[in-house]
Image 1 (tube, rainbow, N blue to C red):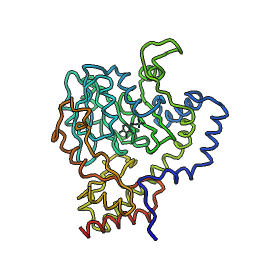
Image 2: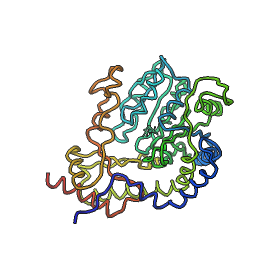
Image 3: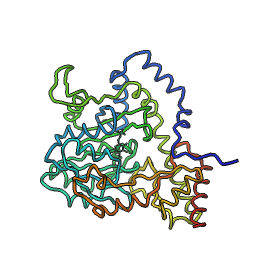
Image 4: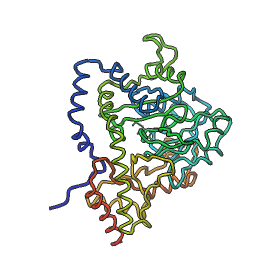
Length: 379
Ligand SMILES: *Cc1c(COP(=O)(O)O)cnc(C)c1O
């Protein structure tokens, strides 16, 4: 008999834990026949606002749209520069070019994989309108270190918190949640995220009432009142079924994020017990950070061979991200080439994301660690 496969992510196990709650929530929306925005979306926005310590929360259709809307609300457009990271999902950069603005890449920190703050400062120009850090894999970038300088220069911070809903960082003694530090925070509810819906969805957060009002208009074609358009926005609404599902899942999020942290700790222990820490470098949690391990992506020796080996063993794993954004074909016109962001390029060659989801069992983790140990022993 062959062993059960270990998937990279198994959403079915999660659904089994909340099936009745989801059925009840969905049924209520179906009975109401209110599907777009409406009371369920408002209620979810209120829940998010409470969770995000009072920031205004504005639902939208996806994390990608949240990023575009955030930059639109800050009037980012042609001639403007936005400094961001090359080591992220595509949408982090496409939202900038979509508006005709220019992405300027700062390389990432080799320890946290988050944007290198000194490089951000060195890339500021009079054209810089915003800095767009990503709280990659669920860990916040310590933006407070350069926030005063950015404010002095009139540069806004837009946080890509698509992977970090529920993550936080202690800043001067206070807990600051991912997405509530800068001018606007952007979240994704893509099903695989820690707080995922059962379809597409996104959210914006801001502590600025004026920006919140503008974002509320921009998501409905720029209309303040239906059929009266102050500017041209997007059609980017969160739907009520997703909101109802997300309300259920938000109630469990802290528990699930805690479970992910236990899994991350256990991986480290299992690698240490097998004497693997010279070959597999576990993620590092910065002091003061609450990492929620959206991904668990150690740097590993001989990455491609290990990936193939694990796949052959029936163990899911994935490369995030195989090609840095500054090297994507569609961004060739920006003029970046190999070697321009060496840390990001190195991470693209060396990281391997291993299974991490709240329902992953200790036995499965032992099998994964054993397989990795076997790979290096037999090489
Ligand atoms: C998922 C993700 C997005 C995009 O979110 P969608 O909801 O899929 O549009 C943006 N940035 C990062 C870092 C992401 O991981």
